[in-house]
Length: 132
Image (cartoon, rainbow, N blue to C red; front, side, top):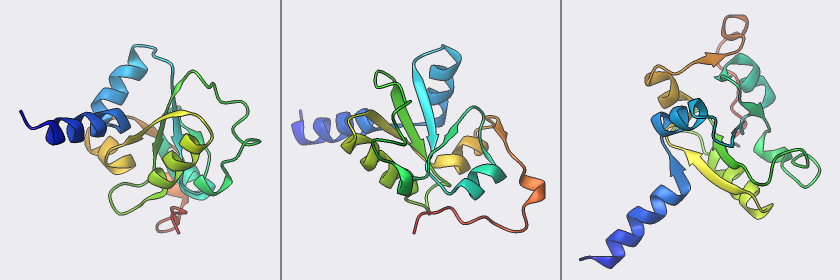
């Protein structure tokens, strides 16, 4: 048995979640809070149904005071070409939350056919995700 490999895959599952597992957790009423870590403009354009907007740049003790510390916090951003979810996961972990990052972000969430909401038609072009 390759213990390094076992540790690697166990760690991945401890810190990442895919869209199917998140959907099932939400449907089962698990204590999960989904946080969109992109800019408020990107959130307004389109986001996961029921998600909370909390751009990674604004995460601190004050802006997270109302978030349930017993919940699993799932951070996401646009997807593979964006790292706002990683920055948000890092920030939330530093603040003491239990965190997982959504693999593939909003892009893979939509590819899997899960619901989004927002005002996509009202935006001109692509909103800045807020990663940089």
